[in-house]
Image (tube, rainbow, N blue to C red):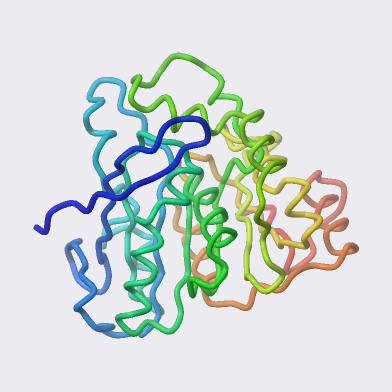
Length: 294
C-alpha cells in the first residue's frame, strides 16, 4: 500500500494541522485499493467519490487520526454495486481531527478531484453522507471550477445537529470535528462564509426521516434541507430510513444512483413550497419531489 498522504487543513478556530487523507478505488474490482493519478479511467470514464461523515472512536481514539473505509464504501456494499453500473467508484477517507470546514478547504479532497480530472475522468460526482455532505457542499463552494459535476448530500446536518453539543461519547482528538457540527457553529459558518453555492452547480439533498418523526434519529429534517438551500431551489428527495442505516439501505442506494445519473435542476419557488408541504405530510406525494414511503 502507498504511504498516506498528509495535507494541511484549516479549522474554524483552531491552528492549521496536518490531516491524513486517502483515495481508494472501490469499483470496478472486488477489493478496495489505493488509487494513483498515473492510472487511466478503467471502464466508465465517469468517477463518483463517496465521502463519509463522523465515525466516533471512543475506545480507540488513534483510529480517528487515520483515513478509514466504511462498510458502505466497500466493493460488495449495496451502494457501490448500484453505482458501479454507471461509474468508477472511489472512496475518500480523512482523519477526523479538525473541523469539517478544515477538511473541505484542505488540499486533500481538492487534490483527489484534480487528479481524477488529470487522469481523464470527464464527469465527477460527490456523494456525501452526514458530515460528508457538508464537506462536499463546502468544497464546491470554495472550488467552483474544480470540475465536480454534481453533489448529492445524504442526511447532512447543514444547520447542525444537537448531538454535536454534547461533551461525551467521543475522544478528545475528535472534539474539533464533532463541535464543528453544532447548530450555532454551522449557523456562524454559513453566515460568515464568503462563498455561495453557484447556480450552475447541480446539487440535491436526500432527506432521511423516520416515520412520524421530524428527524432521522440523528439530524433534524430542517437541518438536512435548510432554508438557505430552499431559497436556492436545491431539490430534495425523501428516504424513510434511519441516519445510521441510510448508506446501507438498498432502496436508498437505488435513489442515490438515480440522482447521480440524472440532471439536477433547481426548483421554482412553487416547487419548493409544494415540497415543504409534502415533507410536513400536508399533501400527497408529487412525483419528482419526494418519496414518502418505501
